[in-house]
Length: 517
Image (cartoon, rainbow, N blue to C red; front, side, top):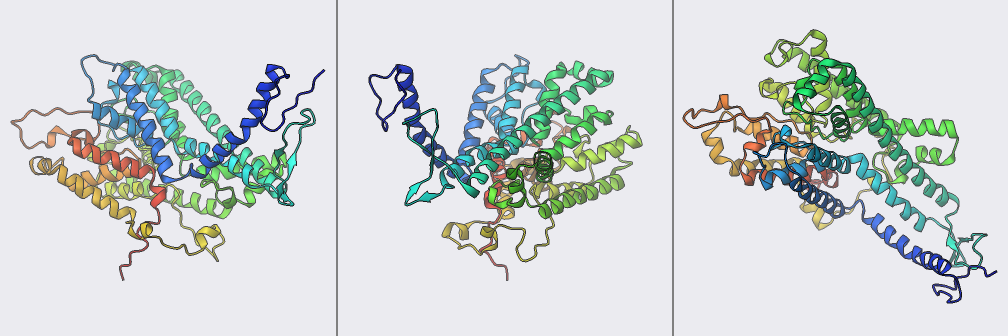
């Protein structure tokens, strides 16, 4: 009986076809691995991620256009459809179309766009690709040749490079970490959808809200879980979460998903890894916890950093919660709510400013002081923390060392400078509206809309015909964001802002070459 043998990359004519196919696949494996390693080195680059989000947005636009809207009498314009696709992909939830205009199939497409655009999903993809980088880099060399391992059942086949020592641990750690993140993603989505489905099924008044909107409980549960965990903020109803302001139980179910999917994700991930290390005792989990920076995963932070991050998150929430309770307790925005519903609503609103954007209050009647506080919260990145660094122990070597500034780095502006430029450009494109409709179109409202798009939050003041001064002209109130009343040029600028905000991590050090003293 002939044994399987492959001589280099050459196939033997006397071997059975199935064995030749096995040899062919084996000979192609190094080429595929090399391509994956090259892709992994570029997976976290600005241009690769920009291309990813633009491509997903384009596919989403095409898919939304193929599906018919809920009402045949209303068909959104192409720019508004593309705007919606970009908004879902960048998890911004800025809207120029009423959410109830979308059909069931379009809501499914938006759910997929939010899933594929979420930070944890995209970081997981990069983490899976990083395994190939570790596999190709971390192996020992003996006498100028790689160390290889052989398969006892495949005698005569080319030997595979085998990572050894620390390289093997790092490779396995990256592999296990990718599985942990995938499990985290699946468990939160499955658990969150199930809890929402059970709650709505057991509470008749909540179920009636969906019944009146023509929404299925299953669709709403999955859509809301994906949107909330990705911190997108889209709600398949025109009123956003105002329709459920009398259902604090539902808000309590959504609150943990907001935090688990964004600001508290690094601390929660570290707790999960610590528990797995305690239960399994595997060296790979211990390696992740002791060498957080070396793993190359931006959300895997050292223990002290996670503690500072969690503390900062709750301090920000507390400040907003107290401010809302003090300034809005008797205002029209909370009219008709019980004290308990006001407390839960204020907490829900405070958590959603960073950066989910779901709202139980009408922001158009919120006090200006609270709106300015919201603008500050929306501007801050999700990993913002008060971190007293001592001797650079909490930062990787590449961050502790003073980097050499290239020409491009020196020419970069700060995040705030770019936002000022965007706001100026929008004021230019909307100058006619600023002149003719000053109560709706003012610099504060434009600033809130722009910062909300940059922070990928989705808060919007909206547009009110009650503030329309020209009573002779017809005006129609619409249940979409303020940007829906902008010109096409203004909408296009905000599309750029959403992409810029989704990729702001690549320019966090912008403007360091500028000195004000």
